[in-house]
Image (cartoon, rainbow, N blue to C red):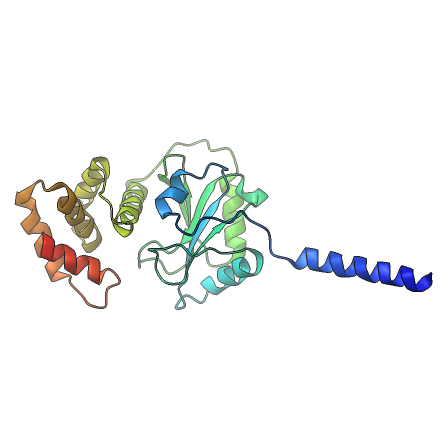
Length: 238
């Protein structure tokens, strides 16, 4: 009888230990799911994290280690190497759509983006550790009393959504194009020129401006750039 009790007790400890150390379960996503589909068809209101690994960022390793240890990851097509998408449920997130990743190359730390229901960036937090990350979650879970989006955030939101269109090889909406044009007129740069040029490719309009865009793209053509192939092909087609 004692032996039986010992076996039952040992089994209980074993089951308890492994159930506690097991990774949090998530709903598996279809590997053919696109990034824009993840944003627009997140029907269960689970937070979605897009994590782009950056080995040059030492602080980021804290985040990678934490998520790898606690959540299952999914690799989606047409995303940079080492990108993982996590669909997770944590009380702190409070059903907000969150993205954790590096926005373009200018950010050196993991960046948390808070997107509203229209996928506009409402807030940005650059955190160097999990404490900063937790602190940020606490802040966004409070009742928002101010409706304020800076021009800088609007730019990043527009470029982010347009970058997704670019990666998935479909045309950029006219509303986004207008915003990209504004950004490009204010401070001409490679990314906005590339996106604007991509719009011309699909819509075949504003011929007088194509030469200007093509010139910017040709000057910035660089084989080491991660967008080189898209960039090179676009210059040929314009």
